Amino acid sequence: MSKTLLIVGTRKGAFLLESGDRSKWTLRGPFCEGWPVYHAIFDASSDSIYAAAASEWHGSAVWHSRDRGESWELSSEGLAYGDEDGRKVSKVSTLARAGDRLLVGAEAPGIFESRDNGETWSLLSTLAGEHGSEDWDDPANQPPGHLGISGFVTDADDSDSFFAVVQGVGAFETGDGGSSWSPRNKGLRRDWPGDYEDVGFCVHKLVRSSDPQRLYQQNHVGMHRSDDAGQSWSEITEGLPGDFGFAAAVHPHDKEAFYVIPVDGLHDRTMHDGKATVWRTRDGGSSWQDLRRGLPQENAYLGVLRQGMTIDRHDVPGVYVGTSTGQVFASADEGDTWSEIASYLPSISSVDVAIVD
Figure 1 (cartoon, one colour):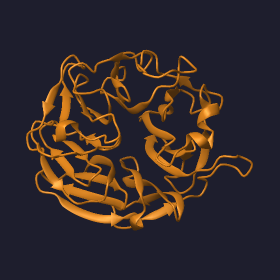
Figure 2 (cartoon, rainbow, N blue to C red; figure 1 turned 60 degrees about the horizontal axis):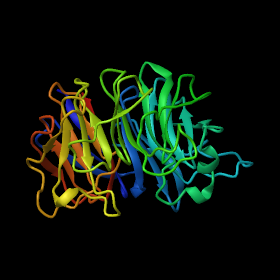
Figure 3 (cartoon, rainbow, N blue to C red; figure 1 turned 90 degrees about the vertical axis):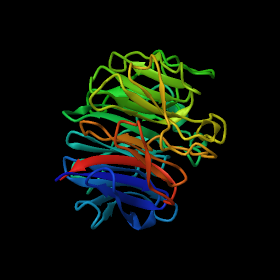
Figure 4 (cartoon, helix red, strand yellow; figure 1 turned 120 degrees about the vertical axis):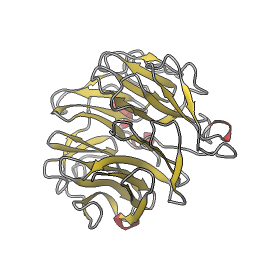
């Protein structure tokens, strides 16, 4: 019998939540010796869990479990720029599987790859020479909370083709394994001046639907949709309570269904009016529905980070949200109803989900 496995990355290690029916959940952890985990994922191709972690005391590394959390190893071999490079790796912030490559994004911005399932790493690309790279390589533009490479969108069948997001700069696509890159930000909105037309856009979360031509993103200023695989974008914010947010997820079987969590764009960056709400569109952004049933609706000033929402691949998908105050909310009916399945965890940075045997 299959079960649903949630992998939760927090400021104090990784946790696992398991359920056979998506109703009753069992919590295990913390793992990774309490290191701050920026992003933790389940990799089906190797039946392994990976966690990108960075500690002020120990540096940056990727934790790896081959037995679903029973034991863990960590590796930092190769996760460094050369001695002659003025930059340094201050953290590893995001992970993705791309065919036979395991990718990890770093700050200062760079992409490392592993071809041996996380045993060793090598530098794949720094996107050097792209518009904006002269600024993002400046340590003055790398504040403590900056993630560098903050996200990937990969193709399971083509290890050479993927998107990478440079925080505060935009999305880039490669079709040759990182040898060359193309900005994919045409049509995005920005409310600040820019030195270049093709970069300078703050992409928070980029996702691909079941139709490879249909992509969505949550941006610093708006939610956007692409119908041509990222070549151009149109805004779909109308109908939402605000244009700022971090987390986003796309329905695994319906390209028209997309989920976001708008938050206040000022310094508090919590859900509007103290009411926990996930928003869903079923028509590609033409209209939006607020999903509140079972979520706290009074004094719920919750925040959710960019990797804090995910969706499983059941016929009727489950949606999962982890908050920066340590709650995990789950819905087994596409977001129509919710329950709190974990409380009082450390601040949650990421939630991933897998269906396992």
